[in-house]
Length: 300
Image (cartoon, rainbow, N blue to C red; front, side):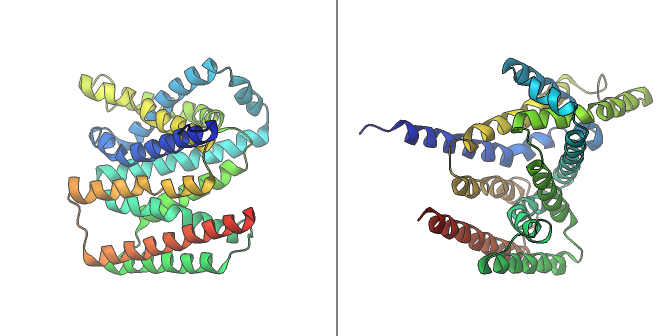
């Protein structure tokens, strides 16, 4: 049976998006190889090597005019600087968490992201929430409360990751730039800070460059590829599949992270922790069901 062009495009898009989220889920394996590098310096290297690769890609596509135009707008610079700062903080907390044995709590943070976005829509953008959305938020809050009781503290890693990524998503909505141009501008704006920090570390004698083995040097350079490739796959997939499909696929990444934390890094996963995840998963199930119902009603 012959497959239509639209169907083939949708399948290719779904495959690209699924691969993107699967790679994001595997990223802890990569950061673990760089555990000896100062986390702030590691993020600075990620900024620089990502910028180098993004500039090559955007120049190859003749898309730098979009970035140059944004640099002439103070409002655009301000929006993208804030979003860059939020993304950098998200990266920093995530890398630190992975390399200090908190992969499972990190996965909880990314499971919470869709629900944080719903809450932000209500309390920041004053959007109307449907009944199931309110119930999903209530279940998520219950899950976080169970985690607090189980850990004896706020699950600050999960909350910071969810909060910074949710805020980053909110800021990106304020920018007219596409995904690649936006990320290029964000890394470009923070490049002076990254260069300054790396230079200071090198002068102080604590920098990684020239003081680590060849393998670690290659892993540092590879941070640009680890950043850019999933984002390119995401951009390809997002343009070819429905938002509801993309919403379902996004759970691949934290699911893979959770499995890594349990079975590869043997982090503790008690019944109480499993109960907190169960509340979050129930909230996500309601959130997803509500979205599907709303989209079907809108399509009638």
